[in-house]
Amino acid sequence: MNFQPLGKRVLVKRVEEANTTMSGIIIPDNAKEKPSRGEVVAVGKKVKDVEVGNQVLFGKYAGQEVSLGADKYMVLDLADVLGIIG
Picture 1 (spheres, rainbow, N blue to C red):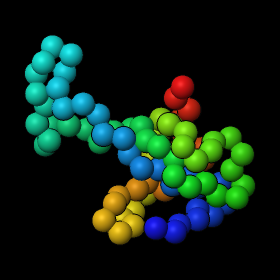
Picture 2 (picture 1 turned 45 degrees about the horizontal axis):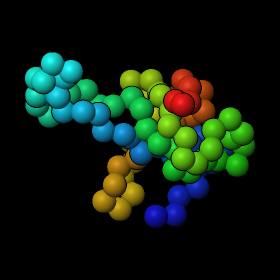
Picture 3 (picture 1 turned 45 degrees about the vertical axis):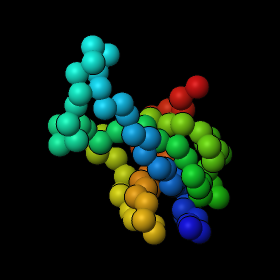
Picture 4 (picture 1 turned 180 degrees about the horizontal axis):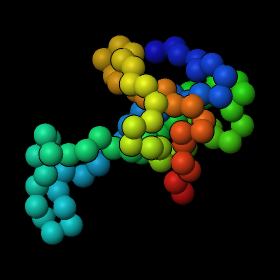
């Protein structure tokens, strides 16, 4: 996969969250929300705030989902990134 976001955009791979609650209840796939956190895998040349490998939070309805090969990613404007985890 070779994808370079343009401008102030980042390419993020969603991080899947746990399938069970803290009390042990299993959450079925159709009841789970899409995760709003992910790992940055590529950044545009104008992006200075985040780096490849950062874990980030983003808005629930932010960005555009794209398929590159067999994997799905999110292309986000830097403004849609709420913050870096860790």
